[in-house]
Length: 143
Image 1: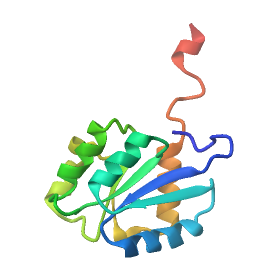
Image 2: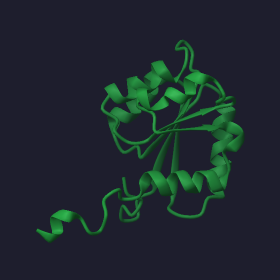
Image 3: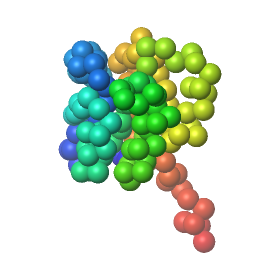
């Protein structure tokens, strides 16, 4: 997951049953400095599964509650079962519930309140989750 993909934009998938969230996130992403970003939007988990199976998704922003599922504990595993290995972030208007502390157990990499999403937060998420996770100097290089 490296944003230095030879001119290709970073592809973010927003999964949210409220189309207004797509408009809000798109406007926020327009203000983010850094790599070019392409935002895809789907309104349900079945469409999200199809999108990740098609490939090319770098980061998924998954709404906590998608009908008919209860919350991310049911939806995030569906993305992992579909073979998606990239970062998944849960977005919600309220992340104070105790179950949000269990997010790694369900294949989720981060969680963020919708009121916290701004260009600084998005820049940090992109930087943190798309950088090359390997050191330039691996121990194997010195063998």
